[in-house]
Amino acid sequence: MAKKKAAKANTKTNGNGKALASQQSVNSVVKSICDIMRRGGCEGAMDYVPELTWMLFLRILDEREQREAEAAEVVGAEFSESIESPYRWRDWAAPEGSKRIELTSEGSKLGDLFAFVSGKLLPYLHKLGDQAHSTARQKVIAEIMLGVDRTKIDTEKNLQDVLDKVHDLSSENIDDTHVFTLSQVYEGLLLKMGERNNDGGQFFTPREIIRAIVQVVQPKIGETIYDPCCGTGGFLAQSFEFLAGKNNELISTSVDLDTLRLNTFFGREKGAKAYAIALANLMLHGIDRPNLWHGNTLTKQVMYDGLFTTAPATFDCVLSNPPFGGKEGKEAQTHFSFKTGATQVLFLQHVLESMSAEGRCGIVVDEGVLFRTNESAFVDTKRKLLDECDLYCIVSLPGGVFTAAGAGVKTNLLFFNRGKPTEKIWYYDLSDIKVGKKKPFTIDRFEEFFKLLPQRKDSDRSWTIDFTQRKATARAEAEPFHGEALKKEQAANGWKEDLKELKKAKPPKKKAIAEAEKQIKELGKEARELRSKAEAIENAVFDLKAVNPNTRVEEDTRTPAQLIKEIEEYGKEIEKALARLKS
Image (cartoon, rainbow, N blue to C red; front, side):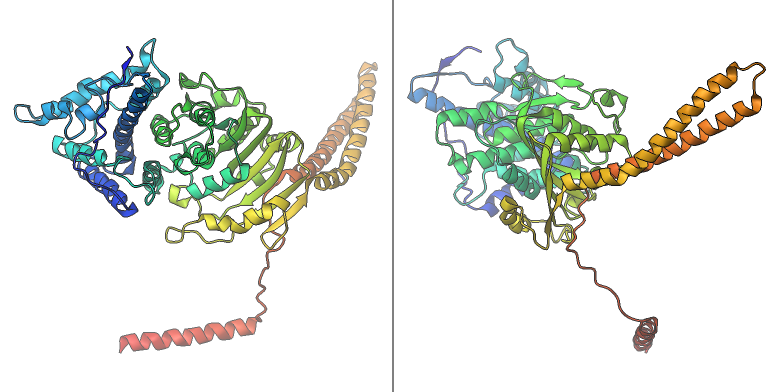
């Protein structure tokens, strides 16, 4: 695209001059947009969030490029817009846009706006990344828009109403000293998408969990941050907010800001819808170049890798919530040392391969990954983790944390650093907290955890296990079984030598041969059973499930006679209540 001297941009972007000075007013606009979309053919959040995503993205992109054009003009620099007229938001979507007026004013035909969006705008945006001189931003735009072939809104009247309200969501109109930024408004929409019955749980990790993980791992400017199954980009977006602060208040130099915007955040995502939303989400947060790879992380089947070309082989910080309960085929398993169909175990292996020499990780895993020792891939993966990394902390979460996101599994947070083997593991137990729709899990539940974490102190909720001692104890307990197994194996080998000689004898000694074969079979079986017992003892070390030793179990000391008496008394109360109802 040819460069041109930046022209003075019209920053009066709000069609009606409406100021949004409170969180309630912003939420009201967003809700009204969603209401129009619902009545206009988008049945649920899984429909209207992706629809709003591309519109809100184009709106904010246009506003950002107008500001960049102004900044370039001040210093006399050249500036190239990513999108040409009449495909810019200000042209076709803004209430006073020249193309919008042309398509909707007197003299236009019903359907002209739809025809422009489907027949001209979207095809143009789809091809933005295909040109030899396409910029990184144009490639991102093309990837976000690639899955959009038409608007899902049913009438042009509803579409115009939506466009007008999206246009009101301008940083010029929103006082961010009093209300959330647009990126946070968008995070609220993603929460809706992740709610149960919206089939969006695969995209959503509760933000309280993400914030806690980021706060523990403490990424730093200059480090690379990676999520191998990034969904809608929650971990990457939260990491940017953690490092940059509100309005970039934690950024001290332009070099640091460029580092964050261009060379810090990397991710992979399989789902086309989630991938597009992640790109938009990260750009709304101010990450100009989201380095996202579209494809199957486990099978390595790529859909698009044009934004991932600068990715390093390993990363400083890995933050992730791999899918729960998935099953993978042989195509995925061939890429890993320890073969299993369990999705989370394969992702855990991928994470270990993706960490730099001194890399740090915070990851969500379901309970099965921690306690299962009956499949070799589970044990071998955990052995590799504990041998190569310091698994210094496990947080046991309540069972209902992911229920709102469509997953009722029990989960845990694992924190580990590469560079030395695990010696001790500090546990923190939140599993007793009751979580539900009316009583959601909140970040304040981690308050004591953050106080105790630096010194790994013990409390009613926390304790430490000496993993080195646990392994030594297991080896000592397993050794007698290994010793007995070895004796059985040596005896069996002796019989095998005898059998060779017996078979050479003429005539063959059938009775002696039969006895030797019997002994070999029985001794072999006994040796395998002993080895199996020893292996079970050694593998039990890798049952990492959190079992709080401080839990107090209330014992029912009532006698059978007391229980019978109480039941009889309850029965009498029920009879009286029924009698009153009948009368």
